[in-house]
Image (cartoon, rainbow, N blue to C red):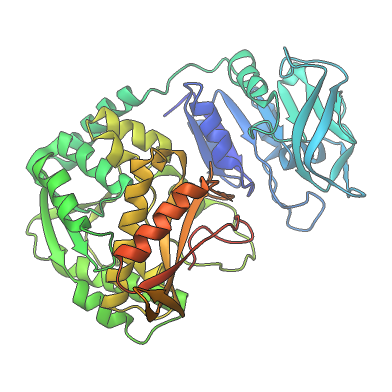
Length: 509
Protein backbone atom coordinates (compact mmCIF):
# COMPACT_ATOMS: atom_id res chain seq x y z
CA UNK A 1 0.00 0.00 0.00
CA UNK A 2 1.32 3.45 -0.92
CA UNK A 3 1.11 6.92 0.67
CA UNK A 4 1.47 5.60 4.20
CA UNK A 5 4.06 6.29 6.90
CA UNK A 6 7.24 4.18 6.71
CA UNK A 7 8.94 3.34 10.02
CA UNK A 8 12.60 2.36 9.71
CA UNK A 9 13.41 -0.17 12.41
CA UNK A 10 16.64 0.31 14.40
CA UNK A 11 15.72 -2.28 17.00
CA UNK A 12 13.40 -0.33 19.31
CA UNK A 13 11.01 -2.31 21.49
CA UNK A 14 8.34 0.29 20.61
CA UNK A 15 8.35 -0.02 16.80
CA UNK A 16 5.10 -1.93 16.64
CA UNK A 17 3.53 0.63 18.94
CA UNK A 18 4.48 3.47 16.58
CA UNK A 19 2.84 1.65 13.66
CA UNK A 20 -0.29 0.95 15.67
CA UNK A 21 -0.63 4.55 16.80
CA UNK A 22 -0.58 5.69 13.18
CA UNK A 23 -3.05 3.05 12.01
CA UNK A 24 -5.39 4.09 14.82
CA UNK A 25 -5.48 7.47 13.06
CA UNK A 26 -6.76 5.74 9.90
CA UNK A 27 -3.43 5.97 8.08
CA UNK A 28 -1.48 2.99 6.76
CA UNK A 29 1.92 2.41 8.37
CA UNK A 30 4.62 -0.13 7.66
CA UNK A 31 7.81 -1.13 9.48
CA UNK A 32 10.90 -1.81 7.35
CA UNK A 33 14.45 -2.76 8.39
CA UNK A 34 16.76 0.24 8.76
CA UNK A 35 19.01 -1.01 5.93
CA UNK A 36 16.20 -1.21 3.35
CA UNK A 37 17.63 0.33 0.14
CA UNK A 38 16.50 3.91 -0.41
CA UNK A 39 15.00 3.06 -3.80
CA UNK A 40 12.81 0.41 -2.17
CA UNK A 41 11.68 2.85 0.53
CA UNK A 42 10.77 5.40 -2.15
CA UNK A 43 8.85 2.78 -4.15
CA UNK A 44 6.22 2.90 -1.39
CA UNK A 45 5.61 6.61 -2.12
CA UNK A 46 5.62 7.38 1.60
CA UNK A 47 3.86 10.43 2.97
CA UNK A 48 6.43 10.47 5.77
CA UNK A 49 9.31 8.50 7.28
CA UNK A 50 9.96 7.79 10.97
CA UNK A 51 13.40 6.79 12.22
CA UNK A 52 12.83 4.63 15.28
CA UNK A 53 14.67 4.29 18.53
CA UNK A 54 17.22 1.54 19.07
CA UNK A 55 19.91 0.20 21.41
CA UNK A 56 22.91 1.18 19.26
CA UNK A 57 25.15 4.28 19.36
CA UNK A 58 25.91 6.39 16.29
CA UNK A 59 29.51 6.68 17.50
CA UNK A 60 30.42 2.99 17.44
CA UNK A 61 32.03 1.12 14.59
CA UNK A 62 29.45 -0.39 12.21
CA UNK A 63 26.70 1.83 13.64
CA UNK A 64 23.24 1.38 12.17
CA UNK A 65 22.92 4.21 9.63
CA UNK A 66 20.75 5.24 6.69
CA UNK A 67 21.61 6.79 3.36
CA UNK A 68 22.09 10.53 3.98
CA UNK A 69 20.22 11.15 0.73
CA UNK A 70 17.00 10.14 2.55
CA UNK A 71 16.91 13.66 4.01
CA UNK A 72 17.13 15.23 0.54
CA UNK A 73 14.00 13.59 -0.89
CA UNK A 74 11.63 16.27 0.38
CA UNK A 75 9.67 13.71 2.41
CA UNK A 76 8.94 14.68 6.05
CA UNK A 77 11.13 12.83 8.55
CA UNK A 78 10.57 12.28 12.28
CA UNK A 79 13.53 10.96 14.30
CA UNK A 80 12.66 9.33 17.63
CA UNK A 81 15.34 8.71 20.32
CA UNK A 82 18.13 6.96 18.35
CA UNK A 83 16.49 8.46 15.24
CA UNK A 84 17.22 11.95 16.62
CA UNK A 85 20.84 11.07 17.34
CA UNK A 86 21.20 9.50 13.90
CA UNK A 87 19.79 12.58 12.16
CA UNK A 88 22.12 14.84 14.15
CA UNK A 89 25.14 12.66 13.36
CA UNK A 90 24.47 12.41 9.61
CA UNK A 91 23.65 16.09 9.12
CA UNK A 92 26.73 17.54 10.82
CA UNK A 93 25.80 17.86 14.49
CA UNK A 94 27.51 16.12 17.41
CA UNK A 95 26.30 13.26 19.61
CA UNK A 96 28.14 12.48 22.82
CA UNK A 97 28.03 9.80 25.48
CA UNK A 98 25.75 10.95 28.26
CA UNK A 99 26.88 11.33 31.84
CA UNK A 100 23.94 9.46 33.36
CA UNK A 101 21.32 8.97 30.66
CA UNK A 102 17.57 9.41 31.06
CA UNK A 103 15.23 6.51 31.73
CA UNK A 104 11.55 6.66 32.54
CA UNK A 105 9.56 9.83 33.05
CA UNK A 106 11.12 13.27 32.51
CA UNK A 107 9.88 16.86 32.46
CA UNK A 108 9.87 18.36 28.99
CA UNK A 109 9.87 22.13 28.40
CA UNK A 110 9.21 23.68 25.00
CA UNK A 111 11.79 26.36 24.19
CA UNK A 112 10.60 27.22 20.69
CA UNK A 113 7.43 25.66 19.30
CA UNK A 114 7.11 24.16 15.81
CA UNK A 115 4.47 22.30 13.80
CA UNK A 116 5.22 19.00 15.58
CA UNK A 117 4.66 20.62 18.99
CA UNK A 118 1.65 22.70 17.96
CA UNK A 119 -0.98 22.63 20.72
CA UNK A 120 1.36 20.90 23.18
CA UNK A 121 1.64 22.43 26.66
CA UNK A 122 4.85 24.27 27.48
CA UNK A 123 5.55 21.78 30.28
CA UNK A 124 4.64 18.08 30.04
CA UNK A 125 5.81 14.62 31.07
CA UNK A 126 7.63 12.47 28.48
CA UNK A 127 9.07 8.96 28.47
CA UNK A 128 12.83 8.61 28.02
CA UNK A 129 15.08 5.65 27.33
CA UNK A 130 18.55 6.76 26.21
CA UNK A 131 22.18 7.20 27.26
CA UNK A 132 23.78 9.10 24.37
CA UNK A 133 22.64 12.70 23.88
CA UNK A 134 22.83 15.49 21.31
CA UNK A 135 25.57 17.99 22.16
CA UNK A 136 25.48 20.22 19.06
CA UNK A 137 22.58 20.46 16.59
CA UNK A 138 23.23 20.46 12.82
CA UNK A 139 23.36 23.74 10.89
CA UNK A 140 19.87 25.09 10.15
CA UNK A 141 18.27 23.27 13.12
CA UNK A 142 16.50 24.90 16.07
CA UNK A 143 16.44 23.60 19.63
CA UNK A 144 12.74 23.26 20.32
CA UNK A 145 12.65 21.64 23.73
CA UNK A 146 14.70 20.43 26.70
CA UNK A 147 14.59 17.93 29.52
CA UNK A 148 17.95 17.61 31.25
CA UNK A 149 19.33 17.45 27.71
CA UNK A 150 18.38 18.69 24.24
CA UNK A 151 15.15 16.76 23.59
CA UNK A 152 13.48 18.30 20.52
CA UNK A 153 15.04 19.82 17.41
CA UNK A 154 13.84 20.64 13.90
CA UNK A 155 14.65 22.13 10.53
CA UNK A 156 11.17 23.09 9.38
CA UNK A 157 12.38 24.32 6.01
CA UNK A 158 13.35 20.70 5.23
CA UNK A 159 10.46 19.08 7.15
CA UNK A 160 12.84 17.29 9.54
CA UNK A 161 11.72 16.90 13.16
CA UNK A 162 13.36 15.01 16.00
CA UNK A 163 12.55 14.19 19.63
CA UNK A 164 14.72 12.38 22.18
CA UNK A 165 11.71 10.93 23.99
CA UNK A 166 9.09 8.39 22.84
CA UNK A 167 5.81 10.06 21.81
CA UNK A 168 4.29 6.66 20.94
CA UNK A 169 4.08 5.41 24.55
CA UNK A 170 1.18 6.33 26.80
CA UNK A 171 3.56 7.68 29.47
CA UNK A 172 4.33 10.64 27.19
CA UNK A 173 1.37 12.81 28.14
CA UNK A 174 0.92 14.64 24.84
CA UNK A 175 2.61 12.13 22.54
CA UNK A 176 -0.63 11.34 20.70
CA UNK A 177 -1.01 15.01 19.73
CA UNK A 178 2.58 15.07 18.42
CA UNK A 179 2.03 11.98 16.27
CA UNK A 180 -1.23 13.45 14.97
CA UNK A 181 0.62 16.68 14.11
CA UNK A 182 3.30 14.77 12.23
CA UNK A 183 0.92 12.52 10.30
CA UNK A 184 -1.64 15.12 9.25
CA UNK A 185 -0.18 18.63 9.62
CA UNK A 186 3.34 17.83 8.42
CA UNK A 187 3.00 14.75 6.19
CA UNK A 188 -0.52 15.57 4.94
CA UNK A 189 -1.10 11.81 4.92
CA UNK A 190 -4.40 10.55 3.50
CA UNK A 191 -6.75 8.45 5.64
CA UNK A 192 -6.29 5.22 3.72
CA UNK A 193 -6.62 2.49 6.35
CA UNK A 194 -10.04 0.95 7.01
CA UNK A 195 -10.58 -2.69 7.91
CA UNK A 196 -13.80 -3.18 5.94
CA UNK A 197 -11.96 -2.03 2.81
CA UNK A 198 -9.14 -4.39 3.79
CA UNK A 199 -11.50 -7.39 3.84
CA UNK A 200 -12.95 -6.62 0.39
CA UNK A 201 -9.48 -6.00 -1.07
CA UNK A 202 -8.01 -9.17 0.46
CA UNK A 203 -10.92 -11.39 -0.66
CA UNK A 204 -10.47 -10.14 -4.23
CA UNK A 205 -6.71 -10.72 -4.07
CA UNK A 206 -7.17 -14.29 -2.74
CA UNK A 207 -9.65 -15.11 -5.52
CA UNK A 208 -7.25 -13.83 -8.17
CA UNK A 209 -4.19 -15.52 -6.70
CA UNK A 210 -5.73 -18.93 -5.94
CA UNK A 211 -8.02 -19.30 -8.95
CA UNK A 212 -9.45 -22.84 -8.96
CA UNK A 213 -6.60 -24.36 -6.89
CA UNK A 214 -6.90 -25.89 -3.39
CA UNK A 215 -5.57 -24.29 -0.20
CA UNK A 216 -4.46 -26.09 2.99
CA UNK A 217 -4.55 -24.34 6.36
CA UNK A 218 -3.42 -25.58 9.77
CA UNK A 219 -6.31 -24.56 12.03
CA UNK A 220 -5.38 -24.29 15.70
CA UNK A 221 -8.53 -22.73 17.13
CA UNK A 222 -6.57 -19.60 18.01
CA UNK A 223 -7.62 -16.16 16.80
CA UNK A 224 -5.11 -15.76 13.96
CA UNK A 225 -5.61 -19.10 12.20
CA UNK A 226 -9.39 -18.96 12.73
CA UNK A 227 -9.77 -15.49 11.21
CA UNK A 228 -7.47 -16.46 8.33
CA UNK A 229 -9.59 -19.56 7.69
CA UNK A 230 -12.91 -17.69 7.65
CA UNK A 231 -11.48 -14.91 5.46
CA UNK A 232 -10.06 -17.39 2.91
CA UNK A 233 -13.30 -19.40 2.97
CA UNK A 234 -15.21 -16.21 2.17
CA UNK A 235 -13.05 -15.90 -0.94
CA UNK A 236 -12.85 -19.49 -2.25
CA UNK A 237 -15.34 -21.62 -0.28
CA UNK A 238 -14.69 -25.37 -0.28
CA UNK A 239 -11.38 -24.99 -2.10
CA UNK A 240 -10.04 -24.48 1.43
CA UNK A 241 -9.16 -27.63 3.41
CA UNK A 242 -8.32 -27.10 7.09
CA UNK A 243 -6.29 -29.55 9.15
CA UNK A 244 -6.76 -29.53 12.93
CA UNK A 245 -4.12 -31.50 14.82
CA UNK A 246 -5.13 -32.61 18.31
CA UNK A 247 -1.77 -32.82 20.05
CA UNK A 248 -3.28 -34.06 23.31
CA UNK A 249 -1.92 -30.85 24.86
CA UNK A 250 -4.88 -28.60 24.14
CA UNK A 251 -7.49 -27.03 26.40
CA UNK A 252 -10.35 -29.21 27.64
CA UNK A 253 -12.68 -30.25 24.78
CA UNK A 254 -10.84 -27.97 22.35
CA UNK A 255 -11.16 -30.34 19.39
CA UNK A 256 -14.94 -30.63 19.87
CA UNK A 257 -15.31 -26.85 20.15
CA UNK A 258 -13.30 -26.19 16.98
CA UNK A 259 -15.32 -28.68 14.95
CA UNK A 260 -18.60 -27.15 16.17
CA UNK A 261 -17.59 -23.47 15.99
CA UNK A 262 -15.87 -23.55 12.62
CA UNK A 263 -16.93 -26.81 10.99
CA UNK A 264 -20.67 -26.60 11.66
CA UNK A 265 -21.20 -22.85 12.12
CA UNK A 266 -18.95 -21.59 9.28
CA UNK A 267 -19.16 -24.75 7.14
CA UNK A 268 -15.38 -25.06 6.91
CA UNK A 269 -13.95 -28.36 5.68
CA UNK A 270 -11.88 -29.54 8.62
CA UNK A 271 -9.96 -32.78 8.96
CA UNK A 272 -9.48 -33.67 12.62
CA UNK A 273 -6.25 -35.58 13.26
CA UNK A 274 -5.94 -37.16 16.71
CA UNK A 275 -2.19 -37.37 17.24
CA UNK A 276 -2.24 -37.16 21.03
CA UNK A 277 -0.52 -40.52 21.58
CA UNK A 278 2.29 -39.54 19.16
CA UNK A 279 2.99 -36.29 20.98
CA UNK A 280 2.87 -37.78 24.47
CA UNK A 281 5.25 -40.55 23.43
CA UNK A 282 7.71 -37.98 22.02
CA UNK A 283 7.64 -36.11 25.35
CA UNK A 284 8.33 -39.18 27.49
CA UNK A 285 11.44 -38.66 29.61
CA UNK A 286 11.87 -34.97 28.62
CA UNK A 287 11.74 -32.30 31.34
CA UNK A 288 13.86 -29.47 29.87
CA UNK A 289 11.53 -26.73 28.56
CA UNK A 290 13.46 -26.03 25.35
CA UNK A 291 13.69 -29.72 24.53
CA UNK A 292 9.93 -30.05 25.09
CA UNK A 293 9.22 -27.12 22.76
CA UNK A 294 11.43 -28.59 20.05
CA UNK A 295 9.95 -32.08 20.40
CA UNK A 296 6.39 -30.70 20.11
CA UNK A 297 7.30 -28.42 17.18
CA UNK A 298 9.09 -31.19 15.25
CA UNK A 299 6.25 -33.66 15.76
CA UNK A 300 3.68 -31.08 14.64
CA UNK A 301 5.65 -30.53 11.44
CA UNK A 302 5.83 -34.29 10.84
CA UNK A 303 2.09 -34.81 11.38
CA UNK A 304 1.11 -31.83 9.24
CA UNK A 305 3.47 -32.92 6.48
CA UNK A 306 1.93 -36.41 6.42
CA UNK A 307 -1.63 -35.11 6.35
CA UNK A 308 -1.01 -32.45 3.73
CA UNK A 309 0.34 -35.05 1.30
CA UNK A 310 -2.98 -36.90 1.52
CA UNK A 311 -4.80 -33.91 0.00
CA UNK A 312 -4.55 -34.07 -3.79
CA UNK A 313 -4.18 -30.97 -5.93
CA UNK A 314 -3.34 -28.52 -3.15
CA UNK A 315 -1.11 -25.71 -4.35
CA UNK A 316 -1.28 -23.18 -1.51
CA UNK A 317 -0.44 -23.34 2.17
CA UNK A 318 -2.26 -20.73 4.27
CA UNK A 319 -0.98 -19.45 7.61
CA UNK A 320 -2.29 -17.01 10.19
CA UNK A 321 0.91 -14.95 10.16
CA UNK A 322 0.25 -11.44 11.52
CA UNK A 323 2.27 -8.26 11.23
CA UNK A 324 4.15 -8.50 14.56
CA UNK A 325 5.47 -11.90 13.37
CA UNK A 326 6.72 -10.26 10.17
CA UNK A 327 8.34 -7.37 12.04
CA UNK A 328 10.05 -9.68 14.54
CA UNK A 329 11.48 -11.83 11.76
CA UNK A 330 12.97 -8.87 9.87
CA UNK A 331 13.95 -6.69 12.81
CA UNK A 332 17.46 -5.70 13.83
CA UNK A 333 19.15 -8.70 15.38
CA UNK A 334 21.73 -8.39 18.10
CA UNK A 335 23.76 -10.72 20.32
CA UNK A 336 20.86 -11.48 22.63
CA UNK A 337 20.37 -14.56 24.74
CA UNK A 338 17.66 -17.08 23.88
CA UNK A 339 15.00 -16.90 26.58
CA UNK A 340 12.71 -19.45 24.97
CA UNK A 341 11.68 -20.56 21.52
CA UNK A 342 8.71 -18.81 19.95
CA UNK A 343 5.33 -19.88 21.34
CA UNK A 344 4.09 -20.93 17.92
CA UNK A 345 5.06 -24.45 16.92
CA UNK A 346 7.82 -24.51 14.40
CA UNK A 347 7.73 -23.56 10.78
CA UNK A 348 6.87 -26.05 8.07
CA UNK A 349 9.50 -27.97 6.09
CA UNK A 350 11.12 -26.21 3.16
CA UNK A 351 10.63 -29.26 0.96
CA UNK A 352 6.86 -28.85 1.17
CA UNK A 353 6.05 -27.69 -2.32
CA UNK A 354 3.41 -25.07 -1.58
CA UNK A 355 2.95 -21.42 -2.36
CA UNK A 356 2.39 -19.42 0.82
CA UNK A 357 -0.88 -17.56 1.46
CA UNK A 358 -0.86 -15.16 4.44
CA UNK A 359 -3.95 -12.90 4.33
CA UNK A 360 -3.34 -11.32 7.76
CA UNK A 361 0.35 -10.45 7.43
CA UNK A 362 -0.39 -6.69 7.31
CA UNK A 363 -2.51 -6.68 10.48
CA UNK A 364 -1.83 -6.27 14.20
CA UNK A 365 -3.59 -8.52 16.74
CA UNK A 366 -6.29 -5.98 17.62
CA UNK A 367 -6.96 -5.46 13.90
CA UNK A 368 -7.24 -9.23 13.37
CA UNK A 369 -9.90 -9.33 16.09
CA UNK A 370 -11.85 -6.52 14.41
CA UNK A 371 -11.68 -8.35 11.06
CA UNK A 372 -12.93 -11.50 12.79
CA UNK A 373 -15.96 -9.69 14.16
CA UNK A 374 -16.61 -8.08 10.75
CA UNK A 375 -16.63 -11.63 9.32
CA UNK A 376 -19.24 -12.73 11.86
CA UNK A 377 -17.04 -14.73 14.23
CA UNK A 378 -18.59 -14.50 17.71
CA UNK A 379 -17.03 -11.95 20.05
CA UNK A 380 -15.98 -14.52 22.66
CA UNK A 381 -14.02 -16.48 20.05
CA UNK A 382 -12.05 -13.58 18.59
CA UNK A 383 -11.25 -12.26 22.05
CA UNK A 384 -9.83 -15.53 23.41
CA UNK A 385 -6.56 -15.21 25.26
CA UNK A 386 -3.35 -16.28 23.48
CA UNK A 387 -2.57 -19.97 23.74
CA UNK A 388 1.01 -21.14 23.12
CA UNK A 389 1.76 -23.47 20.23
CA UNK A 390 3.29 -26.13 22.52
CA UNK A 391 0.06 -25.95 24.52
CA UNK A 392 -0.11 -27.49 27.98
CA UNK A 393 3.28 -29.07 27.34
CA UNK A 394 4.89 -25.88 28.64
CA UNK A 395 2.38 -25.35 31.43
CA UNK A 396 3.21 -28.73 32.96
CA UNK A 397 6.62 -28.20 34.52
CA UNK A 398 8.91 -31.18 34.14
CA UNK A 399 7.96 -34.40 32.33
CA UNK A 400 4.53 -34.52 30.66
CA UNK A 401 2.19 -37.50 30.78
CA UNK A 402 -1.49 -38.17 30.10
CA UNK A 403 -2.55 -37.97 33.75
CA UNK A 404 -0.90 -34.58 34.29
CA UNK A 405 -2.56 -33.27 31.13
CA UNK A 406 -5.98 -34.39 32.42
CA UNK A 407 -5.39 -32.71 35.78
CA UNK A 408 -4.28 -29.45 34.21
CA UNK A 409 -7.12 -29.37 31.67
CA UNK A 410 -9.69 -29.68 34.46
CA UNK A 411 -8.05 -27.02 36.64
CA UNK A 412 -7.58 -24.58 33.77
CA UNK A 413 -11.18 -25.03 32.65
CA UNK A 414 -12.45 -24.10 36.11
CA UNK A 415 -10.33 -20.95 36.23
CA UNK A 416 -11.49 -19.76 32.80
CA UNK A 417 -15.12 -20.61 33.64
CA UNK A 418 -14.93 -18.49 36.81
CA UNK A 419 -13.35 -15.58 34.90
CA UNK A 420 -16.29 -15.58 32.49
CA UNK A 421 -18.84 -16.06 35.27
CA UNK A 422 -17.47 -13.03 37.15
CA UNK A 423 -17.08 -10.91 33.97
CA UNK A 424 -13.33 -10.75 34.45
CA UNK A 425 -12.12 -12.61 31.35
CA UNK A 426 -11.83 -9.57 29.07
CA UNK A 427 -10.34 -7.42 31.82
CA UNK A 428 -7.12 -9.48 31.71
CA UNK A 429 -4.74 -10.26 28.85
CA UNK A 430 -3.84 -13.88 29.52
CA UNK A 431 -4.91 -16.33 32.20
CA UNK A 432 -4.19 -20.00 32.82
CA UNK A 433 -3.13 -22.63 35.35
CA UNK A 434 0.33 -24.19 35.71
CA UNK A 435 0.97 -27.65 37.18
CA UNK A 436 4.12 -27.92 39.27
CA UNK A 437 6.24 -31.08 39.66
CA UNK A 438 5.78 -30.61 43.38
CA UNK A 439 3.58 -32.60 45.75
CA UNK A 440 2.57 -31.53 49.21
CA UNK A 441 0.70 -32.98 52.17
CA UNK A 442 -2.93 -32.07 52.60
CA UNK A 443 -6.03 -33.17 54.50
CA UNK A 444 -9.22 -33.97 52.59
CA UNK A 445 -12.15 -35.69 54.30
CA UNK A 446 -10.06 -36.32 57.41
CA UNK A 447 -7.60 -38.25 55.29
CA UNK A 448 -4.00 -37.44 54.47
CA UNK A 449 -3.32 -36.57 50.82
CA UNK A 450 -0.08 -36.12 48.94
CA UNK A 451 -0.90 -34.43 45.64
CA UNK A 452 0.23 -31.80 43.13
CA UNK A 453 0.39 -28.04 43.52
CA UNK A 454 -1.26 -25.83 40.90
CA UNK A 455 -0.40 -22.18 40.25
CA UNK A 456 -2.97 -19.73 38.91
CA UNK A 457 -1.43 -17.16 36.55
CA UNK A 458 -3.11 -14.03 35.16
CA UNK A 459 -1.37 -11.07 33.54
CA UNK A 460 -2.33 -7.64 32.25
CA UNK A 461 -0.41 -6.14 29.36
CA UNK A 462 -0.79 -3.97 26.26
CA UNK A 463 2.09 -5.33 24.22
CA UNK A 464 3.06 -8.66 25.93
CA UNK A 465 6.61 -7.30 26.30
CA UNK A 466 5.94 -6.13 29.83
CA UNK A 467 3.16 -7.28 32.11
CA UNK A 468 1.82 -7.03 35.65
CA UNK A 469 -0.10 -9.66 37.56
CA UNK A 470 -3.88 -9.20 37.71
CA UNK A 471 -5.24 -7.73 40.95
CA UNK A 472 -8.23 -10.01 41.52
CA UNK A 473 -10.53 -9.76 44.55
CA UNK A 474 -9.51 -12.20 47.26
CA UNK A 475 -13.00 -13.70 47.24
CA UNK A 476 -12.62 -14.57 43.55
CA UNK A 477 -9.27 -16.28 44.10
CA UNK A 478 -10.70 -18.16 47.06
CA UNK A 479 -13.55 -19.47 44.88
CA UNK A 480 -11.14 -20.58 42.15
CA UNK A 481 -8.88 -22.30 44.68
CA UNK A 482 -11.73 -24.08 46.43
CA UNK A 483 -13.23 -25.33 43.18
CA UNK A 484 -9.94 -26.65 41.82
CA UNK A 485 -9.07 -28.47 45.06
CA UNK A 486 -12.57 -29.89 45.49
CA UNK A 487 -13.24 -30.83 41.87
CA UNK A 488 -9.89 -31.85 40.41
CA UNK A 489 -8.53 -35.17 41.57
CA UNK A 490 -4.76 -34.81 41.92
CA UNK A 491 -4.46 -31.23 43.27
CA UNK A 492 -4.58 -30.32 46.96
CA UNK A 493 -2.88 -26.90 46.96
CA UNK A 494 -3.32 -23.76 44.82
CA UNK A 495 -0.99 -20.73 44.68
CA UNK A 496 -1.35 -17.39 42.87
CA UNK A 497 1.55 -16.02 40.80
CA UNK A 498 2.16 -12.33 41.66
CA UNK A 499 5.34 -11.85 39.61
CA UNK A 500 5.58 -9.27 36.84
CA UNK A 501 7.29 -9.43 33.44
CA UNK A 502 10.19 -8.75 33.63
CA UNK A 503 11.82 -10.41 35.47
CA UNK A 504 9.41 -13.32 35.03
CA UNK A 505 7.82 -14.32 31.73
CA UNK A 506 4.06 -14.69 31.33
CA UNK A 507 4.32 -18.40 30.52
CA UNK A 508 6.34 -20.44 32.99
CA UNK A 509 8.36 -22.31 30.35
